[in-house]
Image 1 (tube, rainbow, N blue to C red):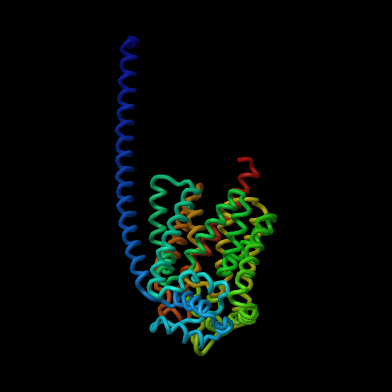
Image 2 (cartoon, rainbow, N blue to C red):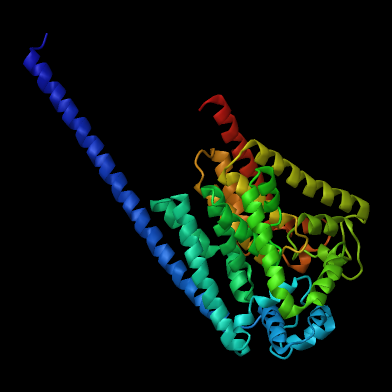
Length: 434
């Protein structure tokens, strides 16, 4: 038997060694984490400089998206007959006044869309674009700051999310084209903050402006009804109606009559089958609808099957999302799922429309409780949407190869599935008392 003094001494030595090992391990981990954070800070700084350079280049170039906004606003200022904007040939001639390279059509925009650039329409084309890009970048920075603050991310996660924002391809496309979906993203962030904080006025006004300016976020109105947010619904309807009333003295009642006649023109048009449109409508139309000009090499010529799959998928997305919303009174995942469906149900959704999905992506990335496999699926979905994949190659337009031409659509569907699955998991955990 050892004396008690020797036993106590050996125990103290053992405890000292363990504390020393723990201290050294924690020191190494702290040093490693600091090194990773410094590396991420350097990467974010490089990406920020790249984004600034991209924004400057975008302000100095021309594009077919911005020329529509500028030309329509200019025609309103000049007092042109607004209904003529829906004449594709005539409007194309008007865009040629400001841009020799790009021509575009005004359809299917509402008359209110022409008023977005009205404050800048007195400037020449080049100067107005510089101010428009600067305005969009400033608004986007403010909205991104508020979004990240609401999500309460810190440290490494914050740096990774900032890097993802700066790398987001639909954001770059919006800047390059001078499109208005950065502004729509800002309004969406305002609506989301109002939704999660119970501010029905902010939620309703933001959704009303989304509807009036670009007919965006349509399925979110169903969320208001399902969750009985009648005050937000009233604010939204009132905002959209007020925008329409304000536009009447400027564009006239005939403009609205022409718009409602023309709005259904795009339903079932064969050009919706081209792979530029990242929607279920385009996917199934491309695979199963023949058109000599737009889709000469479908997988199988079966237009009835295309219609059944299109409507079946869209109704399935809307139905399952509505069920989740009915079960869960308030959750970011529910809002995210409704945003994604709002984009997917639009037949004309292009890459720049996917700007709106940046908010659902950030919501999902900030969620806790992902399994290893769900993290891999989330990473794949984000990569499909956020990266500049060359899916418009002619080689991907024929036969089975066309299945590879819809990366953003697949990414959105994966994100939607993850949002619904995670929302159901949280609902079951609440029921179980966890």
